[in-house]
Image (cartoon, rainbow, N blue to C red):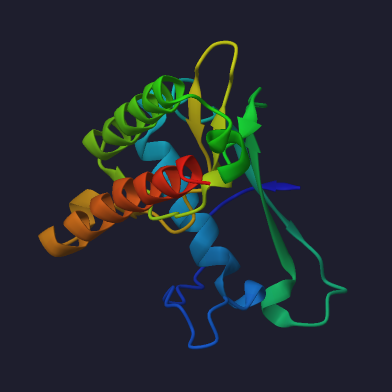
Length: 175
């Protein structure tokens, strides 16, 4: 296993018309985005995202496809808690759901203030420790560094982060 160093595979991360990413084609760019986001967010590691303890790549020469020969590994802190889901949120009282939402919104705003948009719309990529109340965001592979984005991209990324999560909360509370 070698410590990760950025490869020259700079494939643009654009969603294909079929709605899914061919994993081997985008693995390097997604991993690179995640590592850049986590490094930018170092001040928040251990607070609203897991601590990044290492990044590595393994070369697997026996693999069939050329771009599938490298496996990327992020060594992250183990985070105690449950993945957010509609079923968890729907079991909360209105007050509990509002408190949870306030924590999620505060956390995502801290991420944005540090210079990153997450652009991951899945509730399950947010962990909630019910004992401590800690909210932890994972998966920044679709994220962006605000300094390298246009104002329109930043606004779209931030509104997507907050807006979509809020919509999911609303749907869950109405189940």
